[in-house]
Image (cartoon, rainbow, N blue to C red; front, side, top):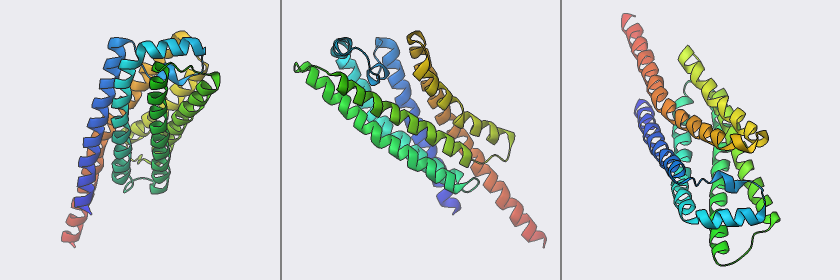
Length: 234
């Protein structure tokens, strides 16, 4: 069991690192070019949407390609991290969180492929209807909402034995849902700063999980050592 646990810690850190690097890459492309995926996930004027998508198509495809890898990375990360944390937390809540993140990943794949197809269709001269944009909006925002549910479920399942573990659980479960829901009602001027805040919250979660996974491992090692000492003293 200890060997498997240690392997899951290593895999958690590996996938957290890969996901963080991909996220940083997508952030870098967006900040350098002004092109981001999020503006194309909301309903707006079809003519403006079509014009912006055509103008942004090359860089948007780069972001979508990176996002396709990011989906694999974050899904694998959650699977491994849940395996690490379940020995000390609520395994059922963690299982629900993983199920929600896998559903998120499936919607994310569909979203990316729809944007790929929409980009190519527009370049071939096809128009874009309000109905298509409405479908994209519902798909994307459902995906985000599922991801918020996933983080809340995972946060409720995480160990909270120490102040550090409690702080990490709160950091996982609180900021993303609040930022995401505020985005739905915030004025347009606040949208990009909120998107950046979401990126940073995701990034902090990956890096924090990579660190705390080691604390979980150390806690188990200390517990085993204490049990061995107690057994030896008897």
